[in-house]
Image (cartoon, rainbow over all chains, first blue to last red; front, side, top):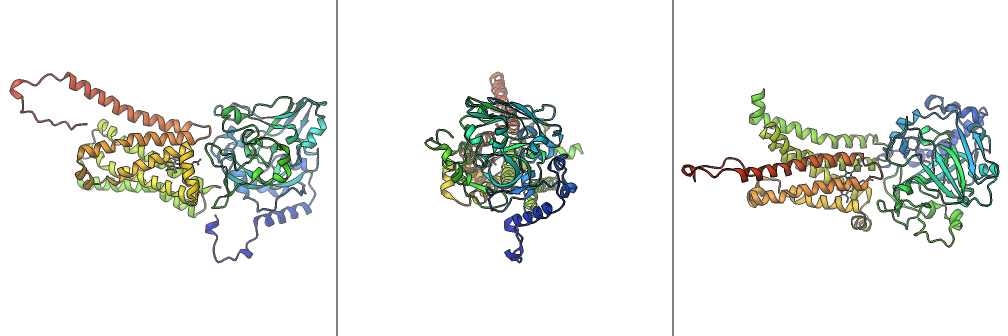
Amino acid sequence: MLIHKPADVPPSEITPRSLFERRRNFLARSGTGLVAGAALWHGLPGAARASTRLQTVPSALSTTEPLSERDAVTGYNNFYEFGTDKADPARNAHKMEVRPWTVRVEGLVGKPRRFDIDELLRLAPLEERIYRLRCVEGWSMVVPWVGFPLAALLKEVEPLGSAKYVEFVTHYDPKIMIRDVLDWPYTEGLRLDEALHPLTLLAVGVYGEALPKQNGAPLRLVVPWKYGFKSAKSIVTIRLTEKEPATAWNKFAPQEYGFYSNVNPEVRHPRWSQATERRIGELRKRPTQMFNGYAEQVASLYQGMDLKKFY
Amino acid sequence: MNLSLRSPSAGTIVAFKAIVFALCLLPAVNLALGWQANALGANPIETITRASGEWTLRLLLITLAVTPLRRFSGLHWLLRLRRMLGLFAFAYALGHFAIYLWLDQFFDWNAIALDILDRPFITVGFAAFVLLIPLAATSNSFAIRRLGGRRWQSLHRSVYAIAIFAVVHFWWLVKADIGRPLLYASILAVLLGLRGWWRELERRRQLSVPPPAKHLEKKVIRLVPRQ
Ligand code: HEM
C-alpha cells in the first residue's frame, strides 16, 4: 500500500511496475518465439508462466499509466457465476473447462459459423492493449489485455445491413456455477457501431499470458469506455440482431444499469457516486473521466444523444 | 460447575468480562495487523469498511441476544456483559464511520453531505449511527441514576429501531446477492419476535391473574421485575 512505502527508498530507486512488466515482456518476446495457440493450451498459472507468454505486438491505443498489480487483476474480480465476493472467482473458476471451446457467431450475418478457440487465436495478430478499467462500483484498474479487435471477427461473418446490435451470451454451467442472483446465462450487448469501434477488444490474455479463468477465459469482451460489467466474460455466442438485446444487469435493475452504461461522472448511480473512483492500489480517490478518458475516440458515437436518458 | 455458573463469584464474572472484552477487540486487532501487513486484499479500504460495518451489526445483534439468552438459560449475570457489548457495537460503528469519513471520502464534506442526503443506504446507516450516540453516552451508572430506570429504559428501546436501520442499510447496499443481509434480518426478526411474544404472554398473564385474596391484600410484595 502506498502509505507504507518505506520512506528511505528514493522514488527513483523503485522501478515502476509498468516499466518492470514491459521489460519482462520484452525479454519474453525476444526469447524463443512461441506459438500463441500452444501457449494458451492449458492457461498454466504460477511456475509455468515463463513458458506461456503470448506473442503480442504493442498498440498505439495503450495508455502509459502504471499497471495495476497482477494479483489485483487476477484476484479481485466480479464474475458472479463463481460467487459474489471479489475473491470467489479466483477460488472457484478453476472448475470451468476452457478446452475445447467454440464460439458461435450467428444472427444477421452473411456467413454464420462456429469458431474453435484456437482458430480465433490465429484470426488476427494479438496486440497488447493497456486499458483503464472502471467498475460501476467506483474502483478502477489499469490492465494490460492481450487480444484483437472484435471488428476483425465480425468482418469474417459479414454482418447484414439489417444488423444493428450485437449480443454476447456467456458460458453457463449450473453444475459449477451459482444458480441464483442473476438470470443466467449472463448476456451483454453493444450497438453495432460500438462493437466495430477499434477500441473494442476480444481479449484472450492479460499480462502477456493466457487469461486466467477468473478473468473470463478463454475469450472475453473488453470495452474500456463502459463500466466493467459490459465486458462479458467466457463468451460462447455472438449474435447480431436488429433489436436492442436484453442485458443481464439491465434486466435485474433497469433503473440502475442502462443498456449503454458508458462511464459518465455526471450520471449518478443510486448506490455509488460516479464522480470519483479509487484506483486499486491508491489511497485517495481520483476524479472519473468522461467515457473513462476515451472521449476523444468515442464521443462521436453518441452525438446528439441525451446521455442522462440513455445511461 | 453448574452451581458456580448460575451464581458465579465476583472474580469469575470479572474473568468472563475480560474474555469477552478480548474477543470483542479481536476483529479490530486482526484488521489492524492485516492492514499493516498489506494482507487485506486488493482493496483494503473496502475490506475494512465492510468488516467494521459487519462487526457493528453483529455486536448489535449479540447485545440484543443477551436478554433472551438470559431468560432461556437462567444465567442472570449475563446481563452484566450487556453494557460492554453495546459499547463495543458503538466503538465499531464509530470506527466504521471514521473509516468512511477519512479513508473513503477524505473529508470531502460536499460528497459526504450528498451521500447522506441522496443515497438511501447511507441515509439509514447514518440514522442508525446518530441514534446510537445517546445510547452510548448514557451507558453508565451515573446516567441511569440521573435519568431514572424508566426513562433510561425507554430511551434505550431505540436500539430496536437502530438494529432495523442497520439491517436495512446492509440490504440496500448489496448489489444483487441478498444472502447475508437476509441472514441478519432473520436473526433480528427472531430477537424482536421473542420480545413481542413475551409482551403478549405478560399481557395475557396479567389479564388472567385472579384478584388477590382479601386477607393478603396490600401484603404481597411484587418480586417479578417489570419488563
Ligand atoms: C450502526 C450503524 C451502522 C451499521 C450497523 C453498519 C453496517 C454495515 C454493514 C453490515 C455493511 C456491509 C458489510 C459487508 O458488505 O460485508 C456496511 C457497509 C458500509 N457502510 Fe455501514 N453501517 C453503519 C453506519 C454507517 C454510516 C454512518 C455510514 C456512512 C455515513 C456507513 C457507510 C457504509 C459504507 C460506505 C459501506 C460499504 C459499502 C460497500 O462497500 O459497497 N455505514 N455497513
